[in-house]
Length: 188
Image (cartoon, rainbow, N blue to C red; front, side, top):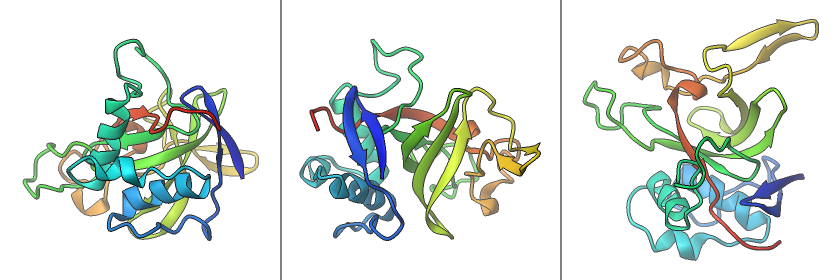
C-alpha cells in the first residue's frame, strides 16, 4: 500500500501486481489506472464512460474537464504529484505515419516523488505487464546512474523500440512526457 496525495486530498493507492487487474475494461492502459483507483475505493468508470476517444484520451479529458491538469491555468510549472496520472506523447507510432505526430499515447499513475525530482509510476508495459518504472523531469537526458549499490534507473525507456528510428534521441519517459493531472477531487 502506498499513501499518496491526489489533487490536495489523501488517497490510498493500493497497488500490487495481483490487485491491479482491470475491472471489465476494454482498454488495457486506462483499465490498469481505473483498477488502481477502484481498488482504492474510487470508481471512476462512470466518469470515464462520459468521454469519447481512446482510453488515454478519456483520462486526459477527465483531468482537463475538472481543471486538474498540471498545465492548466493557475498551475504553471506544477510538478507531477503522487496520485496524478502522467500522460505521454509519441510512445509509439500510432498513426503509422513515420512522423512525430501521436499525442496522448500512454498514461501511468504517480506512486511517489522524491526530493531529487525522481518520480516512480505504475503503468501497463506492452511486453512486461503492470510494472513500476522511473522518470526525472529535472534530469531528462539521464537513463541510468552507477552507484555503490549498482545501476539505478533515472529515466525508464518509454518509446517502443520498433519506432525509435523516427527520433532516436527521444526515447526516455522524460523525453516523451506531456502533462500530468488528477482524475479525482474529493475527500478520502
